[in-house]
Length: 414
Image 1 (spheres, rainbow, N blue to C red):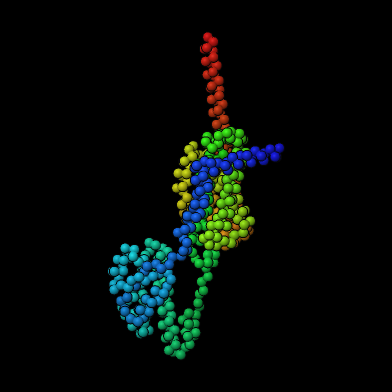
Image 2: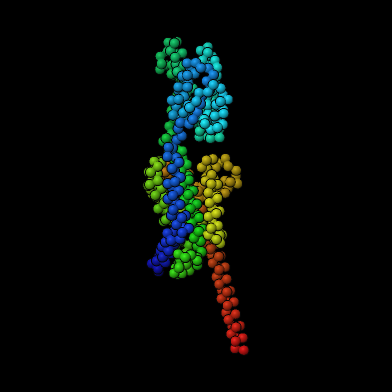
């Protein structure tokens, strides 16, 4: 009995899995897309951090101190000082033409004011439309100015008899040491790619299930000719047999990301394989059951792709990828509660970037298993309803055909 059930499920699983490599649409979505996006998407972030952002300096002072600030600015890794301007109008013109992304303005009389013991004020103008470049320009010029200012202050204290060490302690009594955790070089790729990979897995899986019809019976695909027995199995066999095919297929993907993609692009890779496996089972279980439910609303296989491709970016942002979920409107948060990616993105980052244990990500896993049960119930109920409706139509057609046959036969005998 158990062996017979197992063999029937196995046959359905193999039939479904073979579709991934026979059906043209399935090959593109369930095989090619997962590999292609995992390699294509990280490529723009190979350098991880932005460096040598073009910038300029407007020097109204033209003194030794202003030249010292310019030299220090040129030594900054984040920017490359490409122009020294005579006036701010020229710098603004180049910034509008995207030749530079910010400039430092040194006011006239700055050195004289500092030598009198007064403060000098520098102006940093950065292109706010590009947040990452804005940050680089502002940080570089601020660091350069602070370094020159510290040197001047230490020299001033040295003239009063303090040693260089004492001068530094007086100038900065509470030095701060910054340590970047879980993303050693502070790279943008290590920040954005893990979140996007979870969305790629979710959306390709949802689209793939919708393309292949979910738990429907009697699917009319060219690749399924001669597979009538598997296609007409009872609902539970069809549902779980096909789900297992998707589950194991995508477990291969997540292992490929961990072992190959993370190694290839040198992303933080601290995840334990067992923790990753438990997390993946919960994540893919929720996505597969969600896909089995959604697939039954589309009468045409292309419709699922058209809709689900459009919502990929909103799903990414609902996961709190670029903005805290707590700061989003309540109705957006409410939608996010029903999306597996909302819990998968922070869960995956916690595992791979931070080396989280199973206990530390238990709340994400519980939510994912909860969604899995929720969508399983919805999917089975809707599939059972559709099976009954289809069975009713088949009976009606048979009955109508029998009546028509009897009527024709009677007329013939007359």
